[in-house]
Image (cartoon, rainbow, N blue to C red; front, side):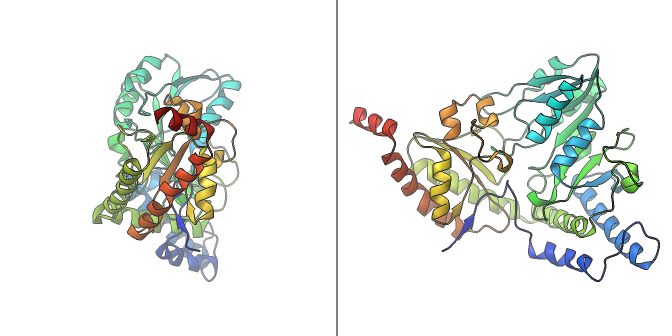
Length: 389
């Protein structure tokens, strides 16, 4: 059976160039990067080359990059590394759970948290962030791009607000890295987290940008790795892979690869809207990253559609992989004002560098007929059809 994968916001396949870059560090180049002999210095040099590559992707100094195990650790380090009991933190209602649950934990530990709302497009109003500020506000944390809808937040405006108020600003850039240009100076953030497996590096590696002068309390205690900001022997193969993925991401932003992915995404979106009734794009009128579209298919259950498509070889999702199987509808979509039924009827299509026009052809052959078959089983849809006829 042919299989097509359109769930790249959950995880991406490791690109061949990335795998080849990391392969030697599982075998012949195995040294501990903290050792002073040849084997250690060989891997230390590889780690620092990767640090330079990640810094180039984000527009910062190499010394401002802290390697982590992924986006969750980066988000947690940014939040717990700055906020403490008595501080006030501002975030949004549609953040990834790595941010939301960290903030909820802080709330239980004596922090004050303000969750600013979003509008029907899934956008934070920067004025709401400004109005939420208090004398004890320590941190603003708002994502660059949403993992479920792809909607891009006005982070540059929020960065200016944070600077004016002398408040730290963190942005979860996991779903933006490699898809849109990132310049941390232009954004005005003090911290920004990325994850390797969202940009064709392996799972288990990420990075946190920490602006020079930001006093970050570590979460892990041990050696003086990562300038004492993140203890633990470095994951050299993963770090090398992240560095190579960052290089490829920069190339893709410059050579038209991202525009090609956007064209494929647009074709999926337009064809489904034209060929399947009672559908719509969640976040349609907002700026989005080029690889993501979230579409509601009224009168059916999204998980039933995911399963039906998977049985035919097409992998899509109803939202965040870390929330898969949840009984409650997506917190992102309900925050945007969707009814629970419409939120549960929504699917995310997220493309990667490996996807082709033929993959899109395959998907567009399957989706309309599969939706029609599931709607035939829907009493609500059949009543609607009977009334309209």
